[in-house]
Image (cartoon, rainbow, N blue to C red; front, side):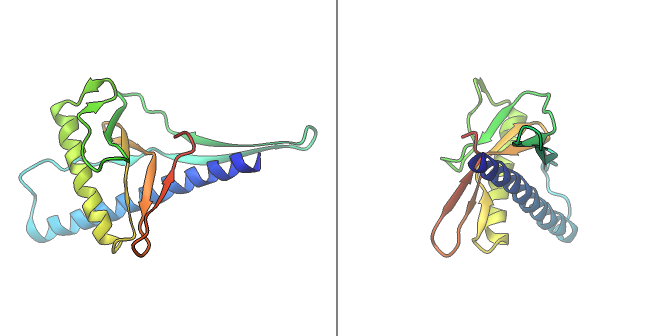
Length: 156
């Protein structure tokens, strides 16, 4: 049970940090747009799913369980960028990416560059998946010094 709880708490922390890093990315983009004006292309406005940690404890049966509660994604689930290759996937699961999905995937590659620079090389979101405007991340990469540490969701 302790090991399972550790994985669930780690997953919640990953979602928290990915949300924070994506917000940092949009602050950078917004400041550049304020300085230079709107770009000649669409900038997708994405966010990570809302999530939370739930801990259930029963005194009578000594059952302790942890759960991650996540917002439901109702649209087509797409893998935009996989954690093994830092480039847009050509397939969003079993189907080819649409033109709009491919543009979003290319934008997410750009966000990885911004994140790496804005964190001074300490990290970026390595795996983007979800539906049109709601993302879930399977992993984040932290790069302290020159060593790379990967954190993955427990479901991987």
